[in-house]
Image (tube, rainbow over all chains, first blue to last red; front, side, top):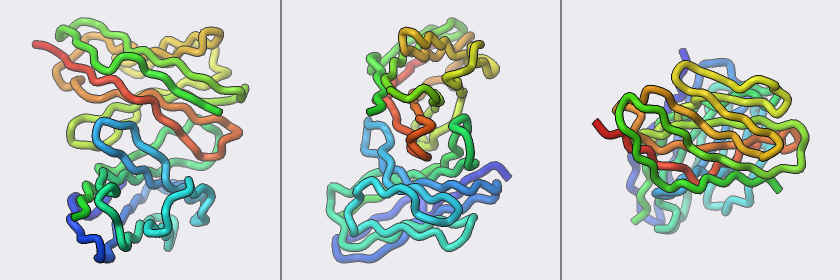
Length: 114
Length: 115
């Protein structure tokens, strides 16, 4: 199994809603990532988990709350988002170790905040 | 601070011809990795090829090769025998050994393959 699965693929939410994005991988990768990508822009790192512990938070607003319940799952909890948070949210995973490991990405969740 | 520069917003190539996508980088770290990813319109990022800073030979993966010139800090992607399915956005990326798990991406180059 060489996939990273993200659900849902599309999400429309109001600014007062609470929703969660889910990411799952079964490749035995112990590093998992959340990236945000606006249209026609490169992905921007949000969070990194290594061995289920948060290792990098790129000064992301608290309305985004990551969670890594186990080595296969990564969630991103959303609350009180703004329209400018509308973007493609990409999850990725990789092995832990030297810098030569490429990421395996999911197909992303296209989020629209109304 | 690490930085990736891709100066070609868009490129056109004829089917079956080769194309080079440019990438330059800046880092103060001696140990780093350089990557290329492909992003079709579907959105998924696909890992194509990796080059380590200490690798003496250029990396190759099928039709993809990475032209690594360390002194010039460039890591260009060469796609040989272009196919229609190669039409996509291509991102150059870098991860420093001292940067933990942080990978940064260049602005990307949109490749259009013409039939």
